[in-house]
Image (cartoon, rainbow over all chains, first blue to last red; front, side, top):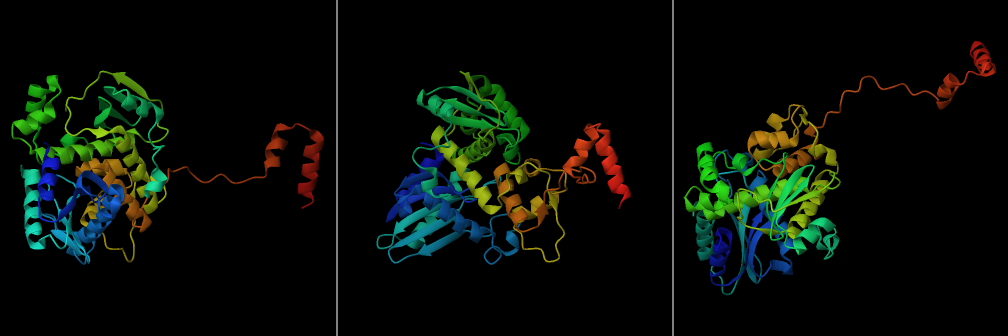
Length: 129
Length: 259
């Protein structure tokens, strides 16, 4: 099993996980998906979550100075709805990229704090092995 | 960007690429602006002079010697990618991310509409070997989606291939770190792909940044120097010069003298 797929499969093992995707926020392309697509269509879900991730990563309010030279200024974005959680975690790579993990959780069964920690770990292991 | 415009029929997939995918062909699809490598009908790699290759993107991560070793040991077997992971040079996911980034980046140029004849060389394999194959349909769809995305930002495709120059604005809009790097290299000589290569970034990232900057008025694409614009003259002047009709010339002279 490949690095991306293994990462998404692990993310799906979190309690309450409904869908997971690895998305490029510059292009809006999903590089990998697992489980259901939030909103029913994977392509739209990737494009819309990418737009949100880009805003948070680039706008000065959240990323002062447009981001410093080293490291990503924003770690994750959390959306809470009446029934779900959406967790976007930026993946830090040694080369120029713009990818994040999107985990969609059922709010009743999901544990946001746990999911946040696990997703951070998964994002790191994806590129470090 | 809506799926309705893309449709199930996928008009973005050229008949030739569709047929190669259906036949599960293996080889290289050669076009004017790049090459697509197929393995069993799936896209395993893409290259374009306009898009920085994996070696450029990973320059900080993998030194030249690392590439050389992998190329010497695994190149003849077409398994350089696998070798980089197995030898511990790169993590699985890391290679996949960089590879997919480079693949879609180059495919965007390789599959550009109307870029000359298309040839397919059967049996040709890329030295990298399969890393994470992508369906031809998805690659074609993504290229179309990217074109639409760029046009939404600033609907002038020439921006992608023209030299860009930074504009001095009285009240410049805030720019991102990525855009700032692009602005620093917008010297009126470099094109967006030149800037991407200099920065070691995917070309598409730079196309996006340049289109956004152009829309904000922070960069412009200088036009070729064509000298002073030709003075517009009435069409009949040309007719006169080709017509040796003395009577007409006389009428003209008389008309001028009467002014």
